[in-house]
Image (cartoon, rainbow, N blue to C red; front, side, top):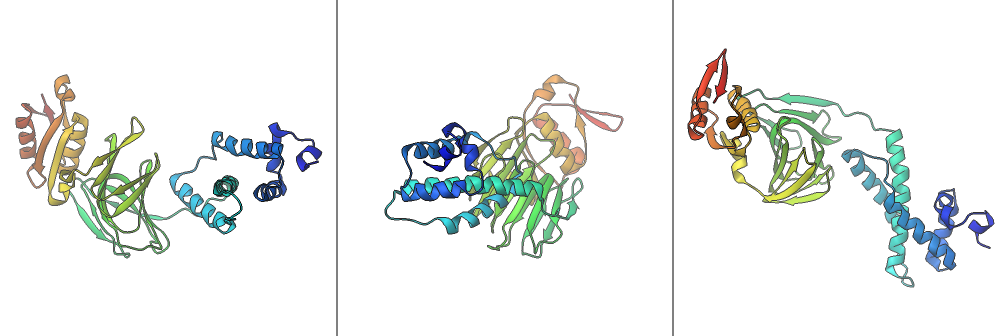
Length: 326
């Protein structure tokens, strides 16, 4: 009589039983050696299939990345290719081990969080751009009105958080320490490449564009972006799309603001950050318009507004130091 029958368990509650100490190892060894009877094979298959329906504890993207690495380090030494059995069998068993180890490690990470990372905050004001050089050889260029958090000890972990605004990253290569940028719900991981992230709080779209090399983007699905590709994430819909890189969106580094079919609210955010002036309207049609134009950011603010208004057939009114378009 097999162990689960002796213990009074049947297939329906076998999954719970398998999690008891020693039982899973025992059954998997016999499963690999072909020393299991039909009910045991059925039980293992049902147990394995059931895991697709159960989610692991929810992890943040950084915790998930750490979890995956630790799972692989634990599972890899245990995978032995035996010529007398089908590859599908040992892959299935390895996958079972991944699920078990993943659950255990997930619980451990949730119960034993790593020490919080200390960050240095870097801000640029309206009409201000700034270039930074980090100790690892990385060069950062912050657009106007941006807020970036940089880990104080980059020798331990190259991790940054783009809180608001836009940054161009030219990352120094270090295969032993990935460069990680958190921007809203997305986490971008690279070894050495150049890319741009635009993550303005007041704009519902977040974009990541790759100029050279490759980057991995996780958080809402997993994507590998190569040179010339961009990912655009819609905060309101919770979905992302892959697009070809639009190089005009990188011209802010050369002092040009490119508005390409943006909403009124998006336009006002970018105008305020680049020219330091706030625009409003009480006219529904002006609010509903889409805006497309290019402006040199070294223009006088009043001149920039005049150009914008002229292109879109609008008029300007000054009321109590406010600029109103109608």
